[in-house]
Length: 98
Image (cartoon, rainbow, N blue to C red):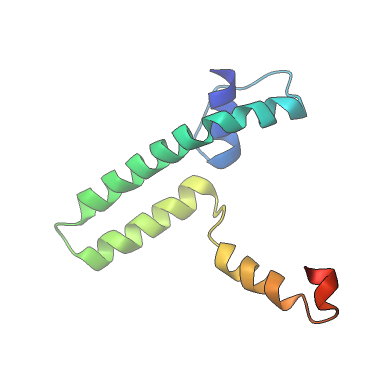
């Protein structure tokens, strides 16, 4: 369960038991648990969406987005902006970029 808790700590802001004696290799091994953490996050966000859906679909979407940002600390929410930032960084030499 050590790997699961490390993955949960790395990818979310959910409270977890403290993991003692952390090594960089431990995080690499915890990557096997990333899909399980993703399923947990998806399930929690689906519950938020389903709970708010009867009131208003737009409210449900907003609450899911807020919950996602809170649960993950905003991890990967700026991925599209990062992609375009990286593509725009090739303003010098295209060979260097590739």
